[in-house]
Length: 350
View 1 (cartoon, rainbow, N blue to C red):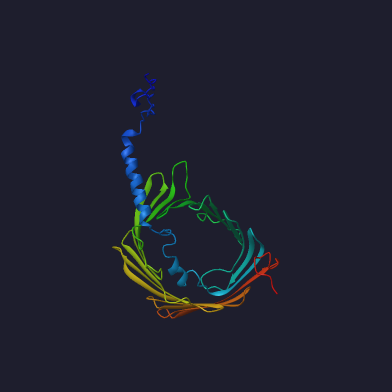
View 2: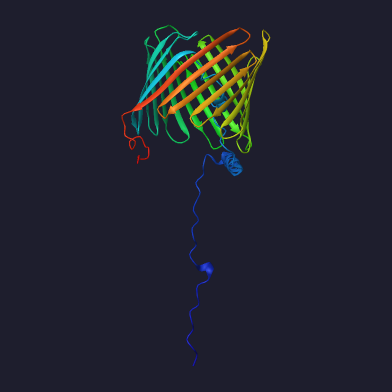
């Protein structure tokens, strides 16, 4: 007796065909190789691990913090600061200055408000001049800034709008000074700083000024910054229009000692000159001492002695050997607060 026939399995060819998704035609297909090349380039840059080069505005930050150009004063000076809040930060300052040989006596009232995204600073002096500054951080990479200055004197008013973008290994900044949307008059500045290696960064800064619709001028500066592997020394160079070259060098000798040098060369057809400046900063336990010497014959020094965390005494002096002149300044900085140590974020006192 014959065994019953076993039904055969259907062949693979007889199985229902799996439909493949249909790719719709795209108008961007002709340029897709370009986008692929850009993606590969960005991936290559990310694999290099290049650091952020900083901003063009802070290209010489370490040198400026060591030298006395931003700290020197003469006559008498007093700054009284009171903190009203720590989170968010809110404090007011009364500043007095008198007896200066170059500046008239003045009084300025200022206030600062800041939180994680917003920074506000404003001030008004005894003549009614008002200055204000506003920063807003949209994200960790993008910050919008605005500055304004209003004065009763003609030609002293100023408004500056600025946006700063910090990429992984580059920094882009654009700003406009007294911009006019109607006729595009004003001063416009754009800068770009790119890290080429882990130590070297190159950049360019372009300035376009248009005082009136019939007159415009453009000029560019070229920048270079070299940072050591341990970040203990930084060298910068900036080639400006009309044959002006500025080179700086900063080195941290120890945890308490910084030294800096600045060289400015002018090779214009009407003027050929060079100015060299050497400076040092020494941080003591409760004091900071700065000294500076330049090729114009000026020797300067500044001592900031902090007796308590809320009281500091300043003494500055400058001798110009070529002009046989001298300047001396004294000042105090007093900080007070009505907040408790816990409200100020300090550890509780035993």
